[in-house]
Length: 382
Image 1 (spheres, rainbow, N blue to C red):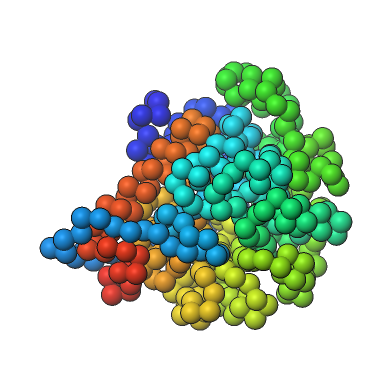
Image 2 (tube, rainbow, N blue to C red):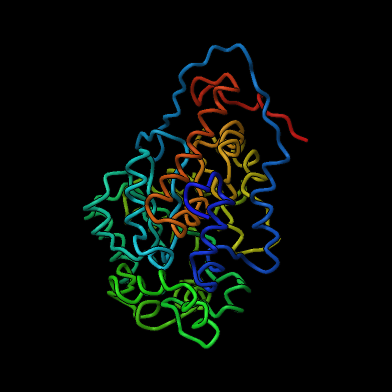
């Protein structure tokens, strides 16, 4: 199987599985507990049907939208994800370049493998920084100030990870950051020499946005769950979120909002946007899917805050369904991480290109010249 054989997210997933040592692949692919919520994130879209409109004469479509103060060319963007240079040596650099090409938002994590400063200097796409609030207040202030200095456009405060989810695949494979060599993992690393040689002989692995204050995750091997459980501030509350909004002073998105009540409180503290997200099913298994909750949240606050549907997106039609319900945009992680692992920047560009083509084709078949033409009247629920 090669890149030209990849036509959808599942194809990229299969190629990524071939290219990655099994602990690394299962870190991307896995989720919490029985992974019921992860599966539901995508399955939820199947409970809703699109109604096409014919003879509408749609030769061109305009999928531009304005999100968090920046106009973007399409209503789908790269959600911030951690540890990307473990998946492919190009890491965030490949994803940032793809975001530039497609004119959309690029998000990086606090646990990114390239620095805030490098992204600010090299990426011209709109830039979103995912802030994990640590017990170390000095680290939190440092990351916010570095984002200001680097010209980031928005911060996404992650609100659903005060503890790590029970990611049983990671427990079975022993996945850590940085990877820890065990007898079992050594066999898988040896069976994937391309990945292993790149990891060993290219730029050294690091988490540059954290290592100014902590060594865990860069020099001290730790599972992601252990990192969250020991390093993040479990006392974070709405007052802390409001304080961060004041310290940042710019566009603030809350990532991980899943209830209408929390969405209203996000409005009250002056957030710009919310990402309706369950962290890819990696936190509370048995919770609702973003698309399941979307209508309720849009109805509660959609006229006062930008609502982003984050998670489970595998097709352009999923994006159209979320926009029709009332989301301003969609985002996702695995939809590009599989492609990054499969083939680096060409993989990410091919994956996003396929999704963009699906959105455009779907809009034409639905008689929608612009995103404003999408609404609940072109949906039916099963």
